Amino acid sequence: MATVAGVDSSTQSCKVVVCDAETGEIRHQATAPHPDGTEVSPRAWWDALRQAGSGVLDQVDAIAVAGQQHGMVALDAEGRTVRDALLWNDTRSADAASQLITELGGPDEWARAIGSVPVPSFTVTKLRWLADHEPDAADRTARIVLPHDYLTWRLRGGRVTDAPTTDRGDASGTGYFSPAESTYREDLLALALRGRTPDLPRVLDPAEPAGRTEDGVLIAAGTGDNAGAALGLDLREGDVVVSLGTSGAVFARGAAPTADATGMVAGFADATGAYLPLVCTLNAARVLSYTARLLGVELDALETLAAQARPGADDVVLLPYVAGERTPNLPKASGSLHGLRAGNMRPANIARAAYEGMLCNLAEALGHLTAAGVALRRVLLIGGAARSPLVAEIAAQIFAVPVTVPEPLEYVALGAARQAAWARSGGAAPPNWAARTAARVPAPDDESAGADIRARYRDARVSLYGAAAEE
Image (cartoon, rainbow, N blue to C red; front, side):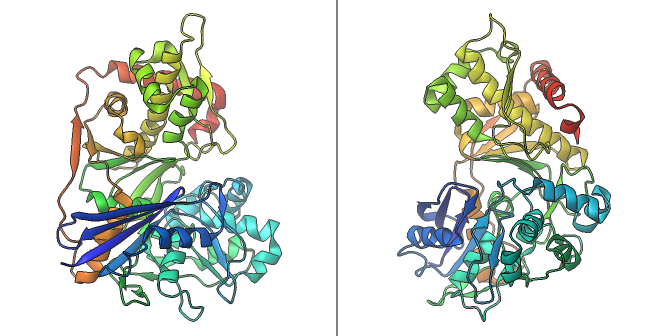
């Protein structure tokens, strides 16, 4: 029996899933933590991968890595890291993003060039920050890779003579790769680094192997985390994923590239040769964790409290920007409570407002996606917070469409494993693995309650941030 391994190297941890190559049946799972912070040594990811994959990765037939997108990993001419990696959730490059947008001629030019408008998460903005704030480090940078590229390269042996590789899905989040043309825009790389042009990873086709480990295990191209999740879920027409992890993501598989000059929708590529229009928020499940801490309760008690409040939380609204925000582009925003009165200042209402605020933020992200032409038949709800029955119930009310909750699995790692099986087989398409569904919640018969919740949320957002929250 052939087996394949998929790796999800996320912000918080490294997860390894081993599957039957033909059926996708899960045979083994393991995890290892990553350090906290928005600035991390790439060596920590490698150590976590070795820990989680100990005794496993040398026994499988193929492996692929899906990793957190956008992270800036700068390597010198000897293959050593120049500095700790800046992660997707590091917003120090907010001013750099604004500079780059202006220097190229505005959002329309960026959308035409790469299908997206840079925000502080994008690698290209972090490179400008590096050039301006650490020019000596920028001078020593010989190669720029992404987190998944780095781990794939280390699996291959990490030799300076072996050029790193990547794929379209992850490359499309850098800000210097055109998904529509499937090519790097080295002029944008030079713009960001003020004339410097370090080497970039070779972009592999979806089923093209990257090489082999020193034990002879085939290594697939790998991809970014959202593209990995899309592959693990086997997205079809009309499926839109709402991912409720530390951050939030709303994405769908598309046959044609998108180019949204508003900057709300990122026109990424997927891991199959198609496209992955995506809207990302910095805040999702963390909002519930922080609200539980505020109220002095555990997460399960927070859900119990929220269930005791009526839909709409008696007009209490929470804007969930506890880590700043990417969509809308408010990197310096903070979380805030609105509509508090003597009669509604109860823990249950604040708890419910946290759930509704998190999901209203993602409902607005979903609206940007459909406005860009993405078909919506149902929402697939994934991520840690999706395991809550209350989250699915409120999501169906606020999104006003049926919500499907797949079996709670590590879909990023599962998608990477499916890609590994594809590379191993050399077939024209990924293997057909069985779908995994745990629950379905229908859209409400009466949509008025959800519409009222969304309207109050929008009013609070606009009253505090005005036009900036609409751009």
